[in-house]
Length: 243
Image (cartoon, rainbow, N blue to C red; front, side, top):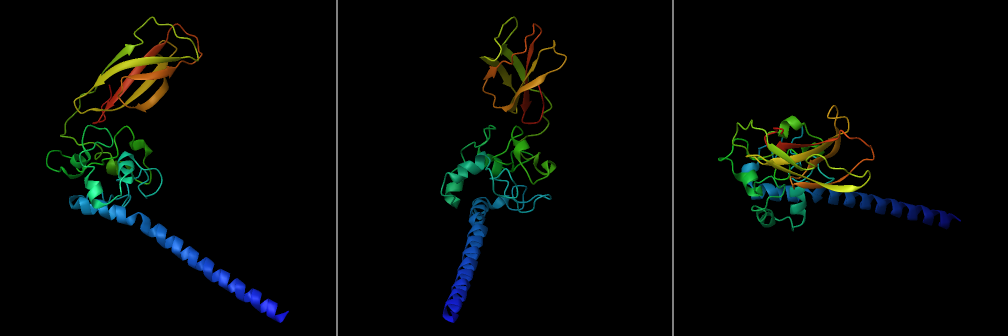
């Protein structure tokens, strides 16, 4: 009996040691996982060190170049997804220079390293005004002026024209129909919001928000009969002007 007790005690001790080793190894791997990729980015773009891409007052040494969560982890933004699809080496990151990951009309390289042409660069290559609402763990005031390169002074709202519907159409409730519009702006269109009113324009409810400027959308019409319906398209440009 004495031998059995000692054996069990010894076995338990071994288990505890193994468990401790596993925990330490797991922690070490997690702690080191993202650091090389962040380092590779700033090795590729040394001019970005110390800029808003590297640190902001509300989140020093953040991970917001690639992540929506500036604390790191979670869903990656469009640029982060592009980096993730490579081997994440310095060379691979530089290889994304000519791409426009966030579709704002400016290449990644321009947003990150062209600090002479624009007044607010570097800007985030994976964020635009249309999707900045998805970020977390950062004060938006720290980054909202660094989303899209700007030469400054754009106060002109986008031009928007609704193509379909254009008046007099009849739609069946709970059915899908394609609505169309044209929107343009010198600084580019950041996002499109769609609205519908069934009380002759007194109030509007949201159909969709943050759409790309594709010019069309499949709208599933609510079963709310009315003869005084209005359809509204609102465009936001990259200088936060609305039209």
